[in-house]
Amino acid sequence: MSEPIANGELLVEIRNHVAHLTLNRPQALNALSYGMIKGMAELFTRWARDDKVKAIVMRGAGEKSFCAGGDIRALRQSALENGALHHDFFIDEYRLDYQLHRYVKPVICLLDGIVMGGGMGISQGSGFRIVGPKTKMAMPETGIGLFPDVGGSYFLSRSPYGLYLGLTGNMIHAADALEAGLADRYMTGEAITALVAELDALAWTTRPVDDIAALLEKHASPAGPAPLATQRNRIERHFAPQNSAAQILASLQADPEAETIAATLLKRSPTLLEVTRRQLNRGAKMPLAECFRMELGMIYHCFEHGDLMEGIRAVIIDRDNSPRWQPATLAEVDDNTVAAFFAPRWPGGNHPLHNLESLYG
Image (cartoon, rainbow, N blue to C red):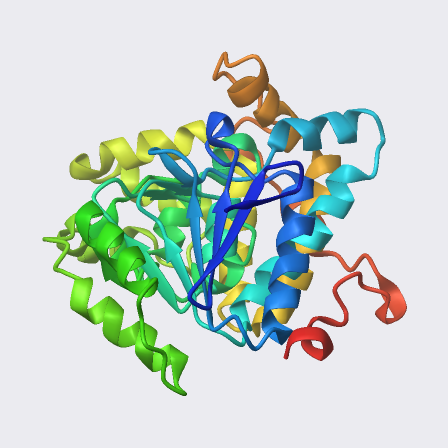
């Protein structure tokens, strides 16, 4: 019998020492509400201390999505009303994401569906990221005037395709998720069903993580060829981290075979393209906790800058898909505007995420 949490937006069932957690907002593609984030933090804290729980399985309700991001409409409304949600949401979301990266028990994330934004945040810390035939993965934030947050500074900067994925927001499927280092194993839908059934009957040893690993190996299969791999040289040539976003765009525009990618960048927020490039360059040299602390300051500034509010309006609220970016071109983006996203906000050690390491290691 499932236990409803967060007004039913989370469902929990514990069977054979496994906590099965289902994100239960299928009508919203399981996008994260603030209640879901708070509820998950409480559950994972409880399970970390519960000797009866040996592993956790996380999945999304319905056939389409693991988690398509955060409840961005509610965050925009909070900002318009000078509320607290658009600040509190990210403090608690990033704290949860960090907690999952440092979690003390095996977590299996079943990512056979849409995985975007906040869904990447709660899955990338998992030791067992399982993709399948329906996986559609992306960090599309620059398309709404945002940057790839939820730890993207860390996990994208450590992928050979991270800058390309972060700037374009392009969607990838299972084989490319494995190629990019953003997933661990591929399973067919039938194999995922069999895996969950076998967990119900698993005879646990004193090494639960080894029990899980062996079971996953049994059900995993090849994902097939990865299109990204055939494009790696071209991607690395164009998306050189030392080049500005404007230089990356110019490089793409000079390549007849890269016209589609160049056209994609022209639709993104010019300011947030350059912010994202610098974010990933910084994140590549920073420990995980520092990445989250940097991102929190950046997200606060996004709500002040203007492109995020306009992007949400154009893409999610009005759906005219014609955001009026300020400025409108990369040539107009100035260094001071970009630097402001990284300016310190909490002097004297008062950062809301100052204690991540002491809480979770």
